[in-house]
Length: 183
Ligand SMILES: [Zn+2]
Ligand SMILES: [Zn+2]
Image (cartoon, rainbow, N blue to C red):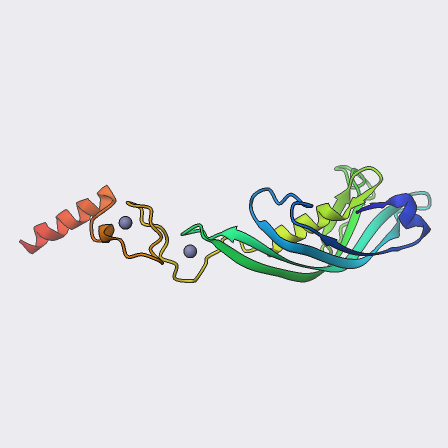
């Protein structure tokens, strides 16, 4: 869904969408399960920066909800994450806050985004909001035992027999040291 400035100038747009998986490319970091739903309102806010300079900002306020799967950081089994939240965002035309601009206004309490050319794609906003909401590192359970570094089996499911043996030369050096101290 694209919010074009001329349309928003006419009147604010109420939106309610249900996007199926693959409608948004999450770049392999997370897989969408079922529809991603979002509803809210887009409008133009005119930012008066001087007697002649009026900047058309887009304000996007709404909510989103969806389910995502990402591989567990230790055992790579898929982990489900429910994403649900509200957003209230402001987008300026790109280039308007270019470096050296005399009229650059800093609003530290608001996170400012930028839109290209003549409007804003809802999908781009939702992609960013979802990626911000997902944990940086997913674990299937807090004490996931991960994959065995020697045989590659999932140690949450099987107790493989190679668990006792050292699998790293550094451990071998340490165990050698241990036995020397003992003797
Ligand atoms: Zn795991
Ligand atoms: Zn093993």
